[in-house]
Amino acid sequence: MAMGRRSGSSSSMALALLVLAASALSLLPASVAVTSPYVRPAPRAALSLLQDDDDDDQTPQQEYRGNLTTDNYVRKFQVHISMVGPDKMRVTWITDDDAPAIVDYGTTSGQYPFSVTGSTTTYSYVLYHSGKIHDAVIGPLQPSTTYFYRCSSNPSREFSFRTPPATLPFKFVIVGDFGQTGWTESTLKHIAAADYDMLLLPGDLSYADFIQTRWDSYGRLVEPLASARPWMMTEGNHEIEKLPLIERTPFKAYNARWRMPYDAGATPSGDNLYYSFDVAGGAVHVIMLGSYTDYGTGSAQYRWLQRDLAAIDRGRTAFVVALVHAPWYNSNDAHQGEGDAMRGAMEDLLYGARVDAVFAGHVHAYERFARVYGGKEDPCGPVYVTIGDGGNREGLAGKYIDPQPAISAFREASFGHGRLEVVNATHALWTWHRNDDDEPVVADQVWITSLASSPACNKNKNKM
Ligand SMILES: *[C@@H]1O[C@H](CO)[C@@H](O)[C@H](O)[C@H]1NC(C)=O
Ligand SMILES: *[C@@H]1O[C@H](CO)[C@@H](O)[C@H](O)[C@H]1NC(C)=O
Ligand SMILES: [Fe+2]
Image 1 (cartoon, rainbow, N blue to C red):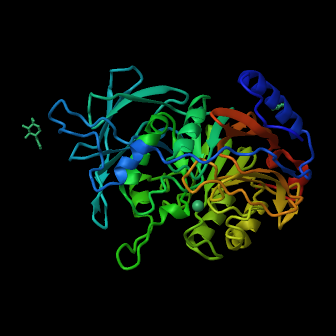
Image 2 (tube, protein in one colour; image 1 turned 45 degrees about the vertical axis):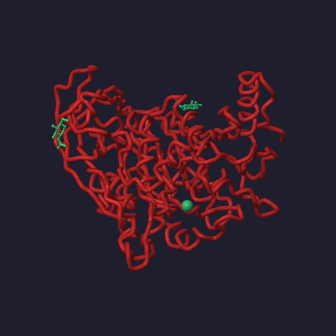
Image 3 (tube, helix red, strand yellow; image 1 turned 180 degrees about the vertical axis):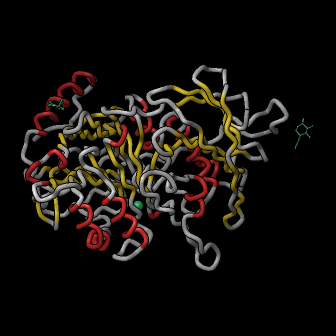
């Protein structure tokens, strides 16, 4: 199974060959276990521009040298957007100084017939004081439409985004454990190079690790992408940032900076650490689970998940996917067994609702499993994927359990990103794009068929 080796300079030819090889792979039964022979190049350093933020300067916006009444505008806002219900978008941005929480927007560049005023929050962490974190929910918006907008009525920068489509097909990018290294930059470049509707992130964003200015540099790093397409995420362990006695509240920076729509959708959770939403007019239901908040039977998250799954109508919802940080299935040495307790608590719920796929991060590598339930291949279980390969500074997790378990279909310790294209009500194409030096290379690919369309998995169920 020699695949994925880049053959010299003719990279487009190599890419075409690899796509062919990958297509052939998808025809294999899931029980053929593949450990990729690809040998990774050396790790890359943290971005030096971004590291400047690690010094004593606590100013969140390094570029800011004036105020909003002068010509010296904030040049970077760390703007990012997230979906709120079917037709609204939350715009989040940060300024150094007090500024109105206004988003002006419209469908023509330079013209903003609509304005929404949202709210502003700040947080302090040890000696660090955040900038003013603003957010405003704009809409109703038309699907598949480009909107132009500006933040705090600041004319110096115009942003734009495209709303997701209201019907299938729908294209997700899925990648976790970003960090902010040269590999992160490479991953972001590869993501930007091909179109998508929404990015899903299964936790571990900035790797700020208590140094709060790194949240700001991360916000600036991802802004070009995160201001243009909705970025939806759940938390990882690097978001906790608790310090004994000094900072007792977990997720302080994450919750303040990356507010998700936990109060919207069919089953609001009331907690930023887990929530769900629909896309494509309800054809796809996305569940964001929280690995680092209570998940045991009877916990608030458990009861919310029960309600959320019970409310899904699989006659309408073709695909259900879940994201979680610590993988429930993992044949890498790294973080072995860390997701087991959560799997023990919640696997039956996901299996009963015929969830189609579960994407995890945490392990800095790529791994795809067969459909699995209770540790065994099961045609009605979810496909499990570990996609914690965004590019962070901790490096790759290259040690695997040997021999490869039969339920593990493909595994490789490389950075990259995944794409899930839900083509229609029965078929979704999953592809994994390895950062092969500076080329994105499709190194794994599989068709996932909706369990809602499988009579064998639904014969004893009237409505899921
Ligand atoms: C903003 O800049 C102008 C011009 O430099 C100055 O007059 C004004 O006092 C500044 N305002 C604040 C709040 O710093
Ligand atoms: C859904 O897409 C798959 C893959 O492209 C295709 O084989 C199938 O015929 C499509 N189904 C319908 C109903 O169009
Ligand atoms: Fe992690």
